[in-house]
Length: 328
Image (cartoon, rainbow, N blue to C red):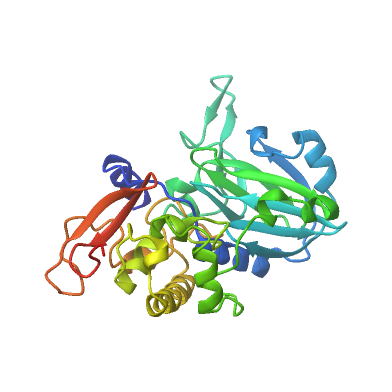
């Protein structure tokens, strides 16, 4: 089943997208359920470049022996709080996801042939004691590039098809001074994000297309390509409409749509149209209820006679209905 899905998505060139607020929230929730108060016993990586703050040897020395206290989310970043006032910052980028399980190296020494042979071609690590249909055997879960070995005999592993993920180990001082975290805008689900604040933030770029503004992490944190399309479809706003021309009523409706859509996706475990999987290697469900994203050429679900179109906005694909999302 998983191999068929992998082949089909590869053949038809389903585009990669970056895990957004609901996917990162799902991951953080999963880590807190399985890894709290466990100690990191060892570290493995075959791609040291993903660790941006330290060389692999220093990274390993700094975190081995530290306890996982809790995981948090800020925008699209996973923040794993460790003992010793250390924080492991993981940005999953385009194709990364964090999993929890138990793996073994996918090779063995064949005594008869006197050579090392793969147990499963294309896999460096394979899940232990998992049947073929187990979610961890999904081909999208085979690209392990960082493994944290835990005190309960299991592991947290980062799988990343394209090796774009970023890992940083921060101390208390560098966490406070981290430029990427400090530049982030308010969180969409924060109660402090009122319609007034929402409008003020977006209007920092009044001449930008609203699609571009919604995805800018310094204005509003955590929204990307999928959810910006769904938000604008739900509000009836064209993705190219300039921020400064949107009425207060539309701004309020857009914020309400934002909160509703993000909460629904969190409830469904995020969106797995592409690579994203939760910590158990399972797919989310939001891709099954898209109204507009990647539905180019299909009739609009509002049954208004419109058709879903696709354009580029600030270099990103944008999907919209040509009827109820007319450009004003």
